[in-house]
Length: 116
Length: 110
Image 1 (spheres, one colour):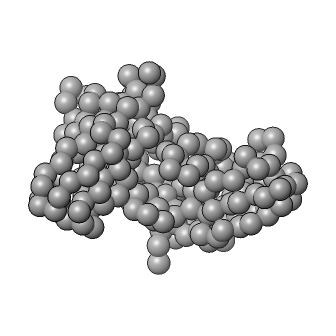
Image 2 (image 1 turned 180 degrees about the vertical axis):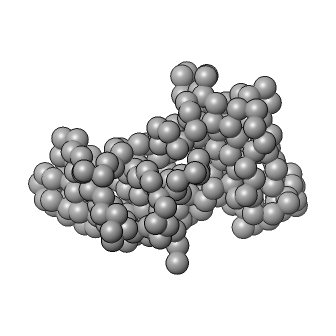
């Protein structure tokens, strides 16, 4: 499809395990964002990639969280030693230009992470 | 104080009603404003941008008040299909990272 694709759509893991979440943005979109949304909460910014520039990691909640974007396209968000408070929907979004220009972010359907 | 604040609601209105939501932002350097819509267990989608002079898209009207640092969304003639959470989004000057409010829940009933 032409939209942002995320996998897995659902992930149940045990506390202490590592997880990887994948995002395939819309082709040609240079900006890529990761947000997370906990039940009843707003979207919490995690990390932002723009082209080949160094990512803005200012939203990552701890050093257990990391992300990379290979070849300016697919991105992987990794959470090490998962904790129960990591349970949330992890949303990836891409934008044709940096969000500040058009403001329109195209979101994937999200990866729902449950840590038991 | 949160950067973007919204009344979570829910706003429970009958079909055909007019309903308005406000959103306040704390950063006076904010330059771009948007409303997104998020259906239950779905991803957010852009509803409309908010321009300084105010703008309208069908039954939806968005307005910006820079002096008081708030934006509003007015929905006229509410439809059942308008039931969703409406997210206020603010982008500060020099930033490429949109900040989302927690959202306002709207329930339109027959």
